[in-house]
Image (cartoon, rainbow, N blue to C red; front, side, top):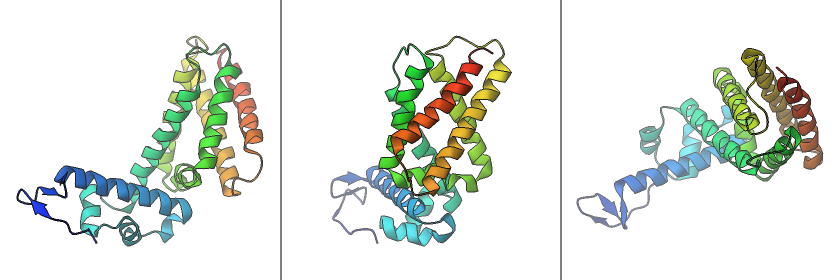
Length: 211
């Protein structure tokens, strides 16, 4: 499937691209195809052959980068989740004056990014629950992310255990609401959803801030 190009320097360079560049390009195509296929079809309906065909690479190159289909999904899920958190973090003021000033732009940005990238949304929130261990790890990572953002607006909690549990409950609850929204084809006004999520976040974190 790989395109044939002129070889120079004993096969190290093809059409001006080094072996490493070509390898990175293949990996990027596989990841992009995985987001598209996992984001539009059920996980069980997507095969390695499907991914290779969509990415225009051979299985040989697939297995140079990934152990198998579950390994690919884990890496794609991690990559997409990091992309989402980077976008949310960039929307939060450096020194928010209140919890509302922190959560409203964060959650409107989160919902907007998911709405504009429905395939990524499904990869992050819908296919991930098939991997329960991975999902629990992501929720804990997201809770740590929220804790880091909250440090911009509130001080250090006195009851760290209670605080951590409250934030874990927060990200778990928000995730379930988002999964329900995605599962219903993102029906409804996304701004209303973002406001509902903001209200939930404020209710729980206002309590957490007193711990």
